[in-house]
Length: 189
Image (cartoon, rainbow, N blue to C red; front, side, top):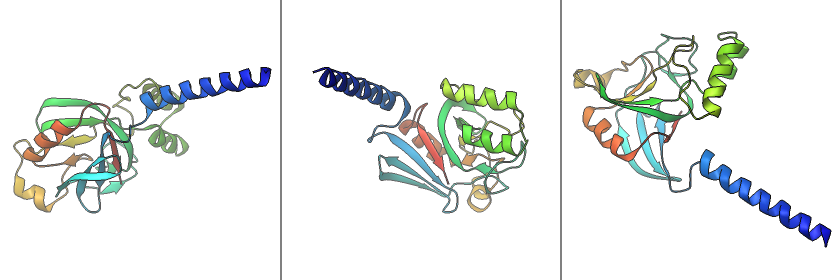
């Protein structure tokens, strides 16, 4: 009888932990999330595993996409981020700020001695507490998805022109901002 009670208590505790963890730390299967394909130059708006919309002809950083090594490298970072804030009055129409640098970015940078332990700890602490990580580290910051503002739309079609962000047309960023909110998962590949 004691074994049965132990098993029931263990089962209930596991179920409660798993339910709480899923509700606060992962997307539900029908949540909207974004897949940014830097090679195909598009953003797929996903609902679970399904693509519900595609925004084509995005622009990325002048330095391409990959692992950012320092502020000002003009590289759009690969990785998993969340929308940390939404700037409605940006010079680029709207700005969906990403939670860059991630813990993974910080681990790589610490191993390469790009950042020190206190900086690494501040980035990890921010992510553990669902806050925006520091934006003023040697890895850079202010990475996001934004519109053109008053920039020339013809340049956007032919050149990667950002400092590491993902750029859309003004109409695309207006539309996208209606589909997402803070906390939306963004995977950049």
